[in-house]
Image 1 (spheres, rainbow, N blue to C red):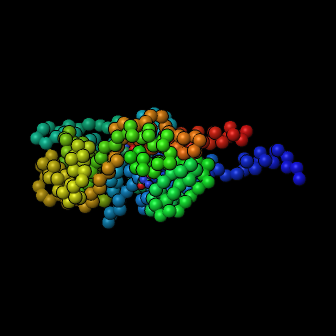
Image 2 (image 1 turned 180 degrees about the vertical axis):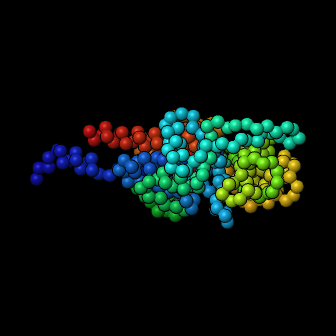
Image 3 (image 1 turned 60 degrees about the vertical axis):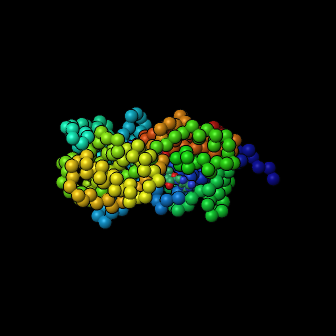
Length: 334
Ligand SMILES: Cc1cc2nc3c(=O)[nH]c(=O)nc-3n(C[C@H](O)[C@H](O)[C@H](O)COP(=O)(O)OP(=O)(O)OC[C@H]3O[C@@H](n4cnc5c(N)ncnc54)[C@H](O)[C@@H]3O)c2cc1C
């Protein structure tokens, strides 16, 4: 039977394209959601228990605490519009409180952080809602990327994708890329720096919501409003985390608590409830551009190690790759 050409074109147009994405941080989620909205069939795999990556949340008895990124800011469009939307939807609020800035035994000053937003709802939930209709597999660690294919740590194979997208910090992508040397060799250029983050409880101290330390050990303390006045997240400097990269949680916590008490002149005790080492907190260098692609093998890399440090660049790398894939499909079909 003769099948007219137009039917083939229509069926090509109707066939749902498929993407497999490793990593449900903001880059992977924004890519997944944009593709899913355009009709792609998208599966996202994350080794953690939920979405969020470095925007994930710790549950506390009274609420939640953000141990990862404390603020979001936008330097340009299209992220500025996205932030305005999130403010309208109630996810974010402009950071209005002044930031106490200074170091021990010196005068403290109040500074205003311009154009910074604070999450008013759980950051991990915001990332989760970006996924839209994409299917999220949690506690699903990907071990190997191959052309159009993902192989899980337990040997399960997910294949036949039109595009495989890897959205993890580049040092964590390198071991997945043995079969894709063209991509792998570019990633050696990227360096990440660590941060230790602590959920601490103390009473007294300065009447501020954000304290920025001018200090070589600690960087920032942010009051957690969802859990009463005494709960703070304290982020170390990169130097502190590099010095105490391989110590026990107890040692890192004790050192951070005593540094904090010295800086703020607090009496004992500072209670450390949770400690987390972000081994790959922020990239010091990046590849540049929004994504790195191996067109022949249908694999692309996104995230802040490719596009540059921060939530804005990570989000944009996911959205821009998705838009390019959607457009490529339209050109292919029409
Ligand atoms: C303490 C801290 C403070 C920060 N402060 C700021 C700030 O003030 N402003 C700002 O803009 N940015 C800040 N950042 C950086 C910002 O959080 C990141 O740039 C951004 O969240 C990166 O998103 P991503 O999607 O690229 O990566 P990630 O959020 O790291 O997502 C990667 C995901 O991949 C998963 N994964 C990794 N390997 C595998 C595997 N083999 N299989 C399956 N899943 C895997 C991980 O579980 C993770 O969920 C901060 C980061 C930290 C840690």
